[in-house]
Amino acid sequence: MTDMESPTNAGVDKFGVALETGTKPPIVETQSTDTSTTSSFSPINLSGNRIEYTKKDVDQFVTKFGKQAPTLLAKDAVMSYANTDFAEQIKKDPNFLTYEGLKNGTATILNFINDPKLEAGQISGNFSKRPNAQKAMNDTDILKFFTTLNDVDIKDTIGRELFRALPSSAAFVQTTKMVGKKLLEGGPPTSYGGAIARFGVPVITGLGTSIFTYSMLDQIDEMILGAESVTTPGQQRALKEALRTGTGASTGLIFPFMITKNLDWGAQAIAKNLSGNSTVPAGVKLSAGVESFLQNYSKAYTGSPLRTKGENIRFGGLTAVGDAAAVGGASVGAYGAEKVDPGSTGTRLLFEIGAGSALPVLAVKASTSISNFVADKFSNFKRSGRS
Image (cartoon, rainbow, N blue to C red; front, side, top):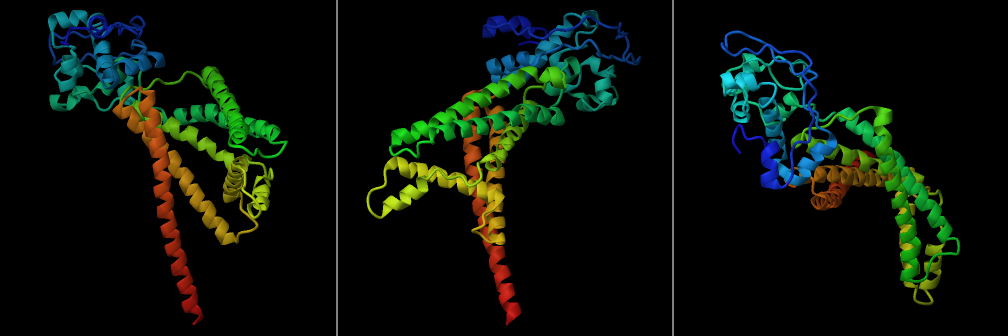
C-alpha cells in the first residue's frame, strides 16, 4: 500500500470489506497552514475535528485484520485527512502529510502540530521543536492525534468492569445456592448421573443468570457512567483487556464468603457410615467431595474452630495466594492473547485458562516452601530460647 492509497478504498479490493468506519465532524475552525515557508509557525489544532471511531469500529478492525489493525487504522485516518482537510497543502508540498512521513519524522505537518492532546500528555512530546529523528510517530501516536482514540483509562476501565462484574458474580453464587438447595432437599445423589444433574443444573443456571446480568449492565453502563473512552488497538488494547479480566476475575473472590455457613447436606456422613460395611455409591463419593471442597474453601477465609489461630492464618494465606495467582494469571493470559492473536476468542480462552491454572500451582508451592521455612526457623528459635 502506497502513501496516497487510502485503506478506505484499498480495503474493499484486498480484504473484501470497507474500512471506512470512523466519522469525522466538519471543521470547527479554519486552520492557517501555509507551507510556502517552514520558518513560519502556524499551529495545527484538531480539537473538534478528529475522526470518531467507536468501540465497534475498532473491534471490527481487530477481528478482521489482527496485528495489522493498528497500521491499517492509522493509514485510514491519515488518508482521510490527506484527501480532505489538507488536500491543498499536499498539492504544494506532497510530503506535508503521508503515513511514511509521520513514521520517520519527515512529514512537514510535524513542524506545525500544537494540540491540546500534547499539552495533556495524551500524545508524547512537542513535535515542532524536535529534530526529524525524534519527531517520528508510531501507529498509536498517529491514531491519538488524528482520531478520538486514546490510551487506556485505567480508573474508568476498572470502575466499569466492577459495575458489570460484581453484580454478575453475586448473581451466579446466589442463583447456584438457591437452585442447588432445592435439588438437594431429598438428600445427596447416589449415582454419577444424579450427581452431575444435581450439581450441573445449579451451575448452568447460575452461569445463565450471571451472563444475563453482565450483558444487561453492559448495555446501560454508558447511561449511568457516561461514554466509555475507546482505546487504540495494539498494546493499549491488550492492557485494557488484562485490566478487565483481572477486575472481573477478582470479583469471584466474594464466593467463599457467600457459601452457606455450616454447609452440610449429609454426603460426607453417608460416605463415612457406608465405608466400613459396603461400597460407597459413586454419586455419594462425588457429592461428599464437592461438599468437602466448599466447606474447606469457605473456612480457608472465614476460619475453622478445629484449627489453631496460626493454622487458620497459614491455610487462609495459602488459599489467598492461590486465588490471587489465578486472577493474575488470567490477566497475563488475556494480555498475551491480545498481543499474539488480537480479537481471537479461542486463543483468549486458552491463554487465560492456561495461565490462570498454572500460576496458582507455582505460587502455592512457593508460598508453602517459604511458610514452612519460616515456621521451622521460628520453632528452632523458640527451642533455642528455652534451652
